[in-house]
Image 1: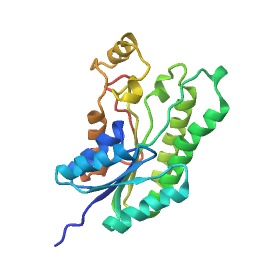
Image 2 (image 1 turned 90 degrees about the vertical axis):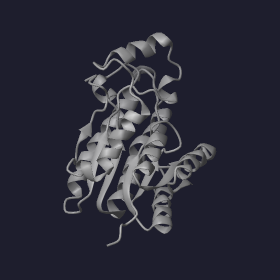
Image 3 (image 1 turned 90 degrees about the horizontal axis):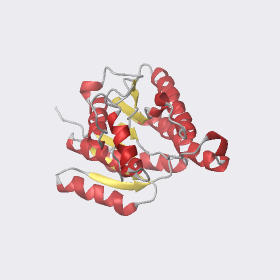
Length: 245
């Protein structure tokens, strides 16, 4: 018997939750393709960290809203490692503004990444994931929390949830799972940027567990869904938020 190398693509893998996911999947035994949009140095650092612990990884730039670049990302994974077993789509953009003041050009850019990007990545995953594979998309618990100024972002993540549930059903017979993780407030640089200590403390106090989530918390959920232990979970939205809703 031979053991096939498991291979994962992680978009948005150069920072925040995506970075932690890439490192966690490498620790789980996956070879990892670290996708990034613009920060090559950060992506290369993730690759070095993975290789330093005995894992295998390669960094690749791709605009997830460009279907040609997304296809090239999958081509590289197949050429380098022979196939794809898990796709974690962590790339995304955030725009905060009251609906009445929203710049619709900025809305278009947000939707290009968060909605079109999810379709482009989902298309390739649906076509190329090997038997037993997993696609994990990212939403946000703000879809249910409905915080003011999050209208554009929450709407885009609501679309991600809808697409995920449909795709799970379209892949009937493929033995491929499709799920979405919806983190609550999580201590990443993106989340903490621009927030004063009082705001952070108030958000941290909301969950019954009385703290912010960490990238490691979210990566552990993704690890479960991408691994054999989570393969009976399919077509679900997992709200990883400490019980905030």
